Each structure stands twice: as C-alpha cells, then as structure tokens.
Length: 154
Image: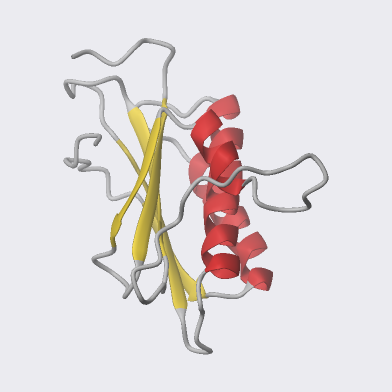
C-alpha cells in the first residue's frame, strides 16, 4: 500500500450517490487538478485521474445498494517532493456499500456494455485496492498515479 503521510490538504467532495452527480464530481476534480501543486500534475496524468475518479464513482453508485440518503465521498491528495517514493496522486472513493460487498475485477466480453471500470483503473493506476472506509459504512476504493516517469524507490 502506498505511504499514508500525505500532508497536502488535498481535495474532497461529498455528494448524494446518484449517477447525475458524477459529472459534477468530475468537473470539481478537474478544477482542483488544474490548480498549482508541488509537484506539478502533468496534463496527461490529470486526464487519467479524472477518468479514474469517474470510473470509481460510477462503480460506487451502480454497484452498491444505495439508500436514498446515501453519500459518496471522493478525495485526492498529492504526495510531496522529498518523500521516500516517487511523487504520487492518490484518489479515493468512499462508498455506502453494506453487507461486506467489495469491488472486484470482472472479466468482460466484447459485447458487454458495462463491467470494465475496475479493468480501466487497474490498467492506468500505479497501484489500486480496496479497504474499509473510515468515512462511510462501506468501502474505500483507492488508486495512485505517479507524477513522474521515475520508478518508485524501494
């Protein structure tokens, strides 16, 4: 698991777990990514990050049993320069899943119209995973993106 000491105050958005709110989350996240960060977030990484957030939030809405009052919490932080690893952008989506449901990679067929979200996350992220959420009753699905082409140091 990536380092947990991300001193950057980061970005956070809480919103009702409805599909129509995902575009709002994407737009707010893209604005935050466009702000000045140290280290800077390359535009290609920002594009990938918006796609990851969109996929994770969509999965949370579509694949969890959302009660009418259910909320999603999306967050992101930037690991500062000088940490022992390459600079990272960490995204998290906290969902309202109940009953031990945990997102898992699915195998999709060519004709399937859905089911590729976590495959996209796995393909783009340096690392990703699932843990119990500290903010909701469900899971946190997290992903990291490297902010440089340098491999992480051991």
